Length: 139
Picture 1 (cartoon, helix red, strand yellow):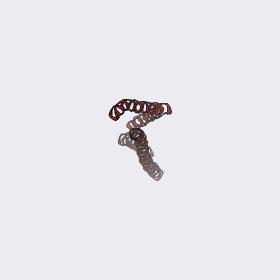
Picture 2 (picture 1 turned 180 degrees about the vertical axis):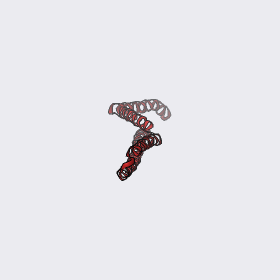
Picture 3 (picture 1 turned 135 degrees about the vertical axis):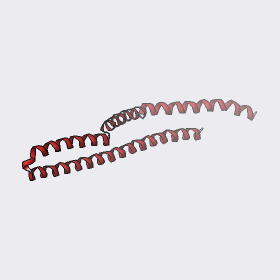
Picture 4 (picture 1 turned 180 degrees about the horizontal axis):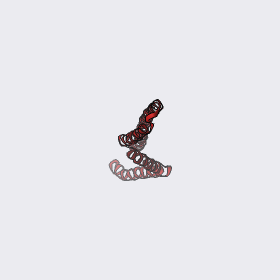
């Protein structure tokens, strides 16, 4: 009986640990994505700085250069958005928020107490069912 209760508790805490690990893995993935986005933005800012220097060096062609930069930058931003999957990232963040809320609901004290109560009740029922057999075997 004690083993069953111990196993049940270990299973509950094992599941809680797995959920915690999954959340930590998601956090690590998000950190990696954020770093990747920062690098892409830094690269884009460097390109913009280079373009700005080029404009000041070629002032006679500044209108044409500005049009090219505008078109190129817009295209680059679209490519970066497509490459990074910003919409997918937003959806993933939303899904992670929903997952976090669900995890909080599942792991709240009332739910854990209910699971433990049910486990204890099952153990008591098993104990009560096994007692008459033990008494009959002793006779």
